[in-house]
Length: 170
Image (cartoon, rainbow, N blue to C red; front, side, top):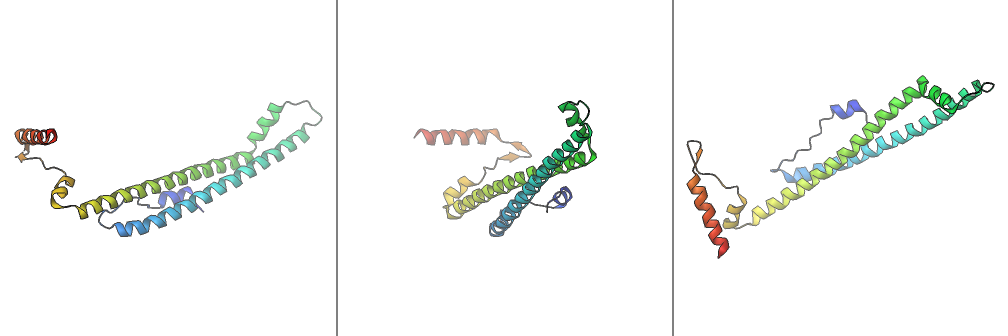
């Protein structure tokens, strides 16, 4: 079962090693399954606590109505007394924690799905780079700026941009 302490101590690394994509794809399946199960478990726990909370409120409400059977009461007075019962307060706090864990687990499922998108894009990029001819390979690499003692040589950048513009016009 998932708890806040377990979630905080888990050192889940969603980072991707671009040099070992095969291992990352294997890890992706494990992460996806793990977080889907955790999300389902935490959601189920929240639903059980919610049902217990509603039942406890009904029982306390019935008890308080029995206490005030001979006196005139309002619905608001009964509701206020029910909400202030220590059992109800404790169960409400457990329910809030369970809802937090369910939401957090759901967001982790989305994060793992985003990680999958990163893996797909990295795999496609590596495939393009692997099958690219030398001319296309240079286009995939980031351009290096000409520098002279840490200063950018602006004339080479301007001439490079002019050459690109001329090629486009042709």
